[in-house]
Image 1 (tube, rainbow, N blue to C red):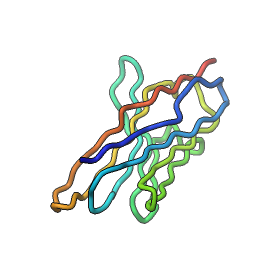
Image 2 (cartoon, rainbow, N blue to C red):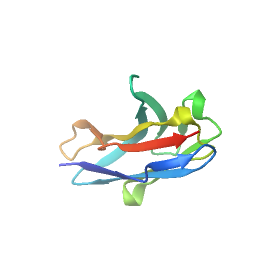
Image 3 (spheres, rainbow, N blue to C red):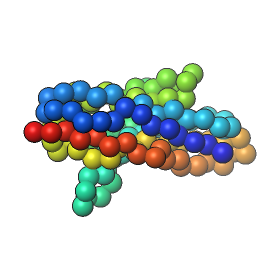
Image 4 (cartoon, helix red, strand yellow):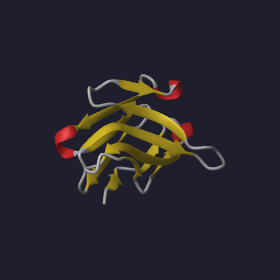
Length: 120
């Protein structure tokens, strides 16, 4: 059974920084894509950033130049460094992994979510 555990959310002022982490545990063959999503009150969940095994990254336009996604394959961990935070970044942030399991079936797994609040 795969579990994802997030950490690093909190309250920060506009212009501040936070670093989110998400670590996977359990038995699986390989982690392919690692993603960060966020969901603000009254809004749909949106994909913020993605990173695949070769390190290729993609970002939603609203965070380009401010957020950086990275991964440590040895630790099964993904990070989201968030700089120059704005009130509109306030949301619950979720990590999401696309995993190839030991039985060769692919699965989609989610963290529990961590609250990020940016005060103006």
